[in-house]
Amino acid sequence: MSAPVRVRFAPSPTGNLHVGGARTALFNWLFARHHGGVFVLRIEDTDLERSQAAYTQAILDGLKWLGLDWDEGPEVGGAHGPYFQTQREGLYRAAVERLLAEGKLYHCFCSGETLEAMRKDQAERKVAIKYDGRCRGLPREEVERRIAAGEKFVLRLRCPDGISVEWEDITKGKLTFTSDLLDDLVVVKSDGMPTYNFAVVIDDVGMQITHVIRGEDHISNTPKQILLYRALEAPVPRFAHIPMILGKDRARLSKRHGATSVIEYEKMGFDPEAFRNYLALLGWSPEDHTREILSREQLFAEFSLDRVSSHGAIFDLDKLTWMNAEYLKRFTPEVLLARLRPWLAKIPGFPGGYSDAQLAKMAGLYRERVKTYDEIVANAGWFFSAPQEYDAKGLEKAGKIAGARDLLGRLIGRFEAQAGFEEGPLEALVRGFAEAEGRKFGDVVHLCRLGLSGRTATPGLFEVMAVLGRDESLARLRRFLTVCPA
Ligand code: GLU
Image 1 (cartoon, rainbow, N blue to C red):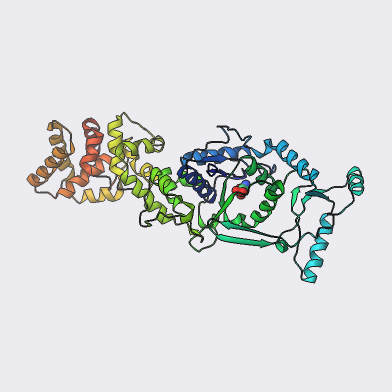
Image 2: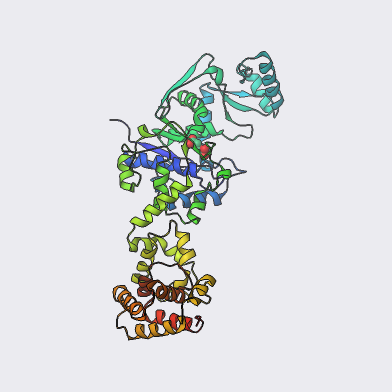
């Protein structure tokens, strides 16, 4: 039986969770869930200057917003921790001691200037630019003497000449690197800190990672990491390097293309489920690629690395916005209200005495009309505070309706005499009224809408009135009567 699937997402907390990182996390999560495996979250915080606890928190928050849960990692713990690299120094040190004792590492005292001169010379001679291994054979006594004298050194891995490293990448196919491209890689820097490549391998071995799924920008690190697995005599995981996310101009996605942090999309009013669905399709597609709206369960069932494309995936805000609107349309008013509540809470006057049933109905009125949550906030404020002003164009139009004020006054009288306040009877009332008065239905609706909302466009008038309720609707109309053009 093959080992249970264990994958990891290993962000460096040097910024917010960005779209590319979120997509890498998502693919790992989906792969783990598809195989009933384990999804590990590991924080790679060894870059002490750039790492910040606030970014770690922002990354966790971003993952949670997307609905991604991890089985091992910060906050949840697990049997292979710690899950912060800064807390794993003892493990790196133990591995260094082992590899030193086995003669697989050596001390290199070459200074920056020496390395620079080496590179220049190699460039002039048109040979491969790489560390030439000049410290490989230093006698032990010399090494000890130079360390004792306080000379700075790094530790390098012996990388035999003439070898090649090859692996069958799940998404890219067979990849081969020869030793011309591989030099004796530094595993411990002169400040005593492990390098990224070394720490990653020690962690992936220690955490028994079976599949490394990450951006293709890491391809050049992989042969170095494979050499480390070999040195450690540890099983090499499978690798899947996933394509970069590109802007519409096919350049790598960057600030230049717009928002790159997940939190910015949250702030723009995207639904996390829709955003996650959209991310899943950035580089992956289900077998029937015409299907685009996929639930969490469908993604779990259908996700496979074989269907990850090897080319860049284009991030298209219009497509994301379309998908978000599709999600909003599919939500029941109750689900929509639950998602919308934090957004509605930003509206002055919320919840304004409305019951949950009324709020759900109100949310439902916007379902087909908006594409993002912030559009609802921008458009629905008048439900919670009666209009203080009326749209100028709306007033102008009211002014062209002959005897608008008297007309509205008579209509208010009819509403007052109306027993219930449901949309069907209200519509029948207004239609009958317009006919009896010899007026255009649209003109009567316009006066009511302007009086109730201060606006010229709202969801359907009678549904709006049913949500506002009898008392609020009448109060608003009576107030408008005082300013309505005669
Ligand atoms: N900390 C690395 C990054 O954020 C992780 C790379 C990897 O997955 O190995 O790019």
